[in-house]
Length: 354
Ligand SMILES: Cc1ncc(COP(=O)(O)O)c(C=O)c1O
Image (cartoon, rainbow, N blue to C red; front, side, top):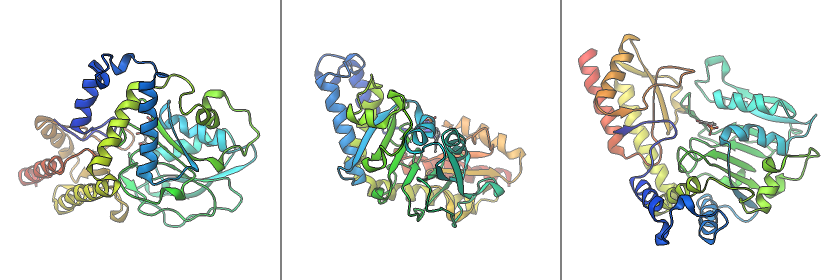
């Protein structure tokens, strides 16, 4: 099968192999990864290696803490403002896609939201280049890659306030100065492992600045104090994330991930732009390297193409239910040959139907 799913999504073959071996016999200890205690020495080592690999890949120092939390990125939509924004205070948010809009809705439950920029006028098909960020806001939040719409920020917005980013769908896909951010979060199920765990990277100095009482399980500081073992974590999901991080490092780190991402995206978008049958949906300069959205010029071709994909073992091509159309996701683990297979199918389809 060719796996173009948007998340949960493709994982490296060797990660799947190692994860399945660990289900039967973790590290040759004679127990399954599914049955070791989360406070055992074995799992503490897994957790510590994963947390420190994240810092290493992101080149962050000890002013940052890494947490593995639960509840998906969706929980972060409320956990971020709950921990950083007091009632009556304001945070700035970029409204550039469905996930950013959801984050705004949740933030409004805790304080005021100033919309720093919006691409709603054109159905989120572009990334605004001008932002308005008043100096008094507590932080600026944006979604670095819009998984549903297929746009990506290819620059870091300038703001003299702490930066908070949802990097769920492009984390570990390129080298950026992560130290410009005060808080980063990402569901692991795209570039960082399996579903069930969310990575949160937080700079210590942004915490302890609000008066609100925070429930234990939602308090970043309590998770930090407990070395990300406040309660039972999803042991297997953390382990799969560790295997994925080890794979990224072994393959050449974020530099190599970016090189591969641009090769895949260049190949796909060149084919798309040359096609008489298909067309892209978003501004070229803002196209995502991870999620490419497109459509058929003639609506009746869409179902025919999806049928062709199915026949050829290609899955995950249907666009998100909120926007329709077509989408392929090309995360870190995807070989160039998979994108080539899609491009060949698109060319064959065009020859038949144009
Ligand atoms: C950019 C982005 N943010 C947030 C989410 C929501 O993540 P979760 O389902 O883990 O809550 C997704 C899911 O695809 C996403 O792509």
